[in-house]
Image (cartoon, rainbow, N blue to C red):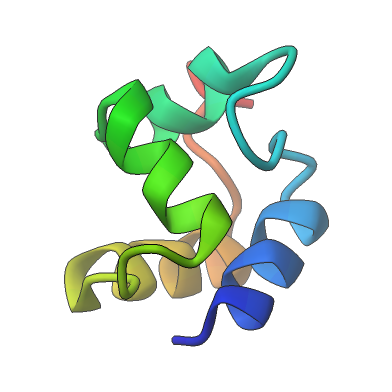
Length: 68
């Protein structure tokens, strides 16, 4: 998954991109730290396969209730 695809998936899921306002919601949904979220959003780190698969699952089935 490219950074552009990652951003598009977060946008479609209405999850904030980056570590601005609301980053906690995205970090919780993906199970990552603020630092990892910043690296992914900036494109400084490749999107790990498990996160790409998780995003694909969320896109197909929606976010869990506690993350929505």
